[in-house]
Image (cartoon, rainbow, N blue to C red; front, side):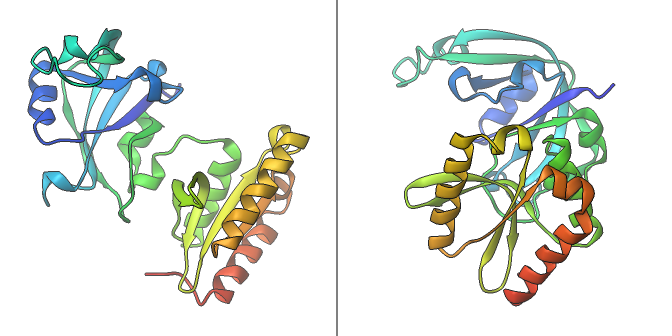
Length: 242
């Protein structure tokens, strides 16, 4: 059975010694990912502040022993003037922190906060995009993109006209970028969802994005045809950006 895991960012250098010595990690309850409490393992992503030896990589992980809900002031008693001192946080109590068999780098610079994943993926991933636990539909598309050596960023947030959108896949091309979406019939065929998708597509297109949407039926029955369309669009946009 696959064991659920979560990758969390270590936002500041002074937090890592605390995590290592006291073996706990905190996430605001309000912004925690949906699967946070199911995670049996927690891994750590280090941003640019950590320097070349650690930056933009997942290197360490630990088992989750238990999770408490506490006020921020309980975690950091000295920070009694902090504006969020009375907010609720999940406190993940951890077992021994260990190194992964090999580090998992982020190939492109992007904002990473939390990544739902599994222990199996943590132990086998070659890069950050391999970690995401998404729908079987998206996983099937991702594996085919990898086979065809089409580099992509998964679950990428982009800001368009003061609105943030999460892209299933972003493909960076020379002249413009592609938003590739995998639409499950159960959700995306509902009238309200169709209206939201149309508004989203129009906004992205008006800011220079090329939006490609494939239904679950297309992906399951005609994946080769879907990828032909993706390749043709990449070619139209003068190829992948290196």
